[in-house]
Length: 174
Ligand SMILES: Cc1cc2nc3c(=O)[nH]c(=O)nc-3n(C[C@H](O)[C@H](O)[C@H](O)COP(=O)(O)O)c2cc1C
Image (cartoon, rainbow, N blue to C red; front, top):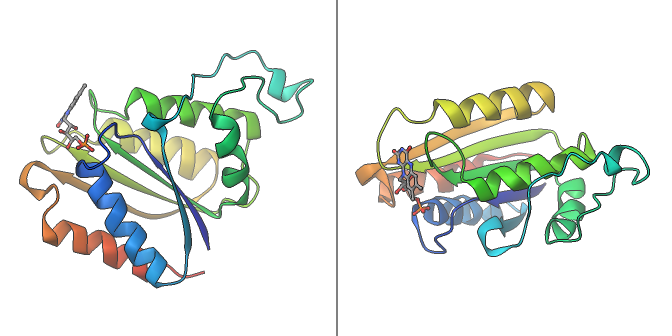
């Protein structure tokens, strides 16, 4: 299965990246084709709400930035994984910009499954991100939830947590 991971962390070797790396290792072992887009290393602006994509643009976004290289991957992907540190009880701004730009495609045509990976300093800070994931991805885009994974404080980069992510990647079928 083709899997797209949108990683919203600015830290290349941070806590979110560690969880993403373990997930990717497991998924690759099971033969999945995973593309990780580190959105903080890209120039991806927010949606302008110009509606070009839904009128003259016929599904194409007018903004010529790095999101243009993400769209084809998104259209091929059967599963999307949102990965982010928790910032003010939600996703990072950079990830939110990329998510909002999915608007141009309406529903990416092959997408069927989703998962969520979150890292934070404290526990009990996930409701904002989970709310968006459940309502916009599971309910609106009608994706099947494959799992929600989170790590806070000392759980970050712990062997136990990384094994959980590795095992999750390995367990994916399809
Ligand atoms: C701007 C900013 C906002 C943050 N907001 C929260 C928060 O609301 N709750 C929390 O528990 N941690 C918060 N954190 C801490 C990060 O979520 C945490 O350090 C995370 O593990 C960082 O992941 P990374 O190494 O992938 O960047 C915040 C960090 C920053 C820089």
